[in-house]
Length: 302
Image (cartoon, rainbow, N blue to C red):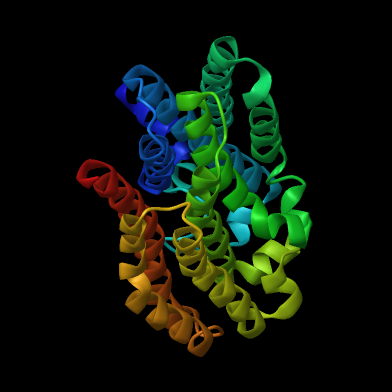
């Protein structure tokens, strides 16, 4: 039983589920900053729904990549989509499908509950979120422009604005600017994480800008998206939609300088690129967490 449970959880890729809590915290921080009271039960449900959604797309991606033969063609790195469980026990590939569908069901049920609470205002985000989860691997990965922003939309914009909505019953510019932080970061994360897998990805029909432009030129896209994160924080603050505490998110800029420089320098040197990928993950985790913490500190100190 323990082995079965472990192999059902593995496709969700728990170590990679660190951004949804930050996205939920950004939505909650925006609500508090604008003077709303927080229903802790709603906040917990939002966290469950967001984490389940992210776990679902991870598991479905694992399942489809294995079935397409992509895993067999990929030289795995810590940033690849494949998981050791499927390499060791390929007969359990159906576990990834079960986990993905189960997590998606949990997320959908959370969304349905909030529809009964707040009405239909959440429905567009919910339907678009489900579409991104289901369509990402089989279709979206073949559409360069959409695949560039789809991860950031789902894990960034939809989660932050969705959290704000389920806590307040409305949308706001504060939540929108807060959502731009994980939007840019998760999108650039997927770009740079595609660098090691160009050849196997292309062999199964994927089309992204790393394949189309090459790693060197794609590293510039990565850099623009990463620095757009910090610009969004500054613009949100200048326009008065984010409190001064949100500027805590700028503390990771020294790492961003390093990763953008080294991503270009090592674009075609995968071994040299791996430390850059690791540092970029830290930037993607810490920046939204620091921004959320800064917003909450602004609330508590006001």
